[in-house]
Length: 137
Length: 73
Image (cartoon, rainbow over all chains, first blue to last red; front, side):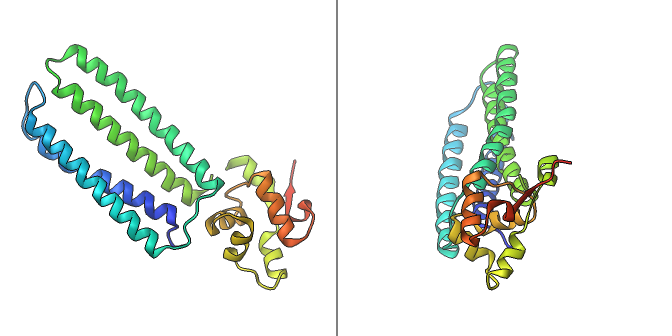
């Protein structure tokens, strides 16, 4: 069965999020520091801007190629379940980041831990939706 | 889907063929859902809302029970 419009969008979000933030973490974590440096902030902003451009461009291409785009009740239910799964991860990450903020020096570790868990929660959200699109809900 | 999916079955595929080989896309367009949703309903991977269920029955011009069956055993 070919990919639906929703599945194509989800794959786009999943791959761009993984790609651009994977790049950011690979660059930012290659040097250790106590606090977040201005270069890392600039790298983060660059990653976000490039990711947004890639996602907007990708959605435009998908919409042009798949003119029968429509979302229905099943898509909305799957989105809700994906968000719920992602929220479990995000809540865990917030808690662990707060613990890290208390026990570690500076803001480098807790900032990147929080960001990492946000990225993972989004990936879990998209992966859950892709799984439910295929398996059924 | 689990138990709920096993209890509710449907005759949508047979009704589509009875209606002059209606495609899943045609049914989806008339009901207002995606073709993937029609496919999921036919494969018992998704139970539609009451509104969608009634719309499907109205497209085929048959009672709801002719389209969907509930097995309570």
